[in-house]
Length: 275
Ligand code: MF3
Ligand code: CO
Ligand code: CO
Image 1 (cartoon, helix red, strand yellow):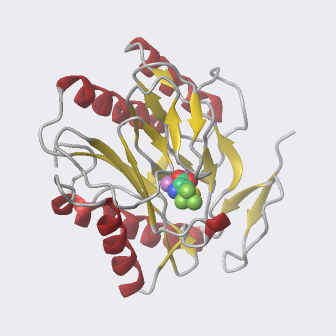
Image 2 (cartoon, helix red, strand yellow):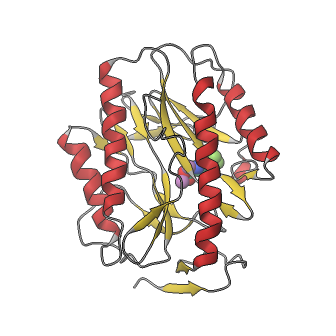
């Protein structure tokens, strides 16, 4: 049985306990600011994502932008993670750790940022094309963004989380891609990862009902090949087992009375490449 709790006091951090929080106007205002800031960081990275730039240089820009604005990257020190963003290149599904690897012509890379602004988490990621990217990879990136937005279209009161999952899975599979099952979207707000778990494949009409005030991410990972994932020795980097390309986009959203508000839309209109 899904339980919900109305969080009237949005200045209090309630621990994760399986109950879905329903936030009020104060929460929406906090998430709007944090989400917009996450999107501004992703916008600002566009000119830097070019061949020759290392992923740790990108990480430094994210760190500097966040701290200059009085925000803290949520990933810094999170379960032993030591970076300000994740950079997942080509067959890396998610949680790629920024390092000495330089981007090269033809790469596709997901950059995932989560600044905590005024206590609220703005979690968003986008794909970037590095130089001249083959059509096969650009198609994957386009369809993955379509999956995200088709999922979000289902995010409204009365629908269930499974309606989002189903929209994503149907679209991905229509293109003969597969949906990664090992990682999910998540509730968020004053916590980074909260209930509910947002799976990206599933049946319509299943899962918790969507109610106004729910905050969560939608962040489908879509592979050209099989869905199977393996974790590298570093304990973070997830790659496709068959080394096929993988793409991901992520928005943080809030359910409203009539639909949803996307907190992490790009102010510059850089929602998907080409930027
Ligand atoms: N931002 C990721 C998400 O969408 C989480 C990254 S956790 C990290 O939930 F530790 F790997 F950075
Ligand atoms: Co997330
Ligand atoms: Co993220």
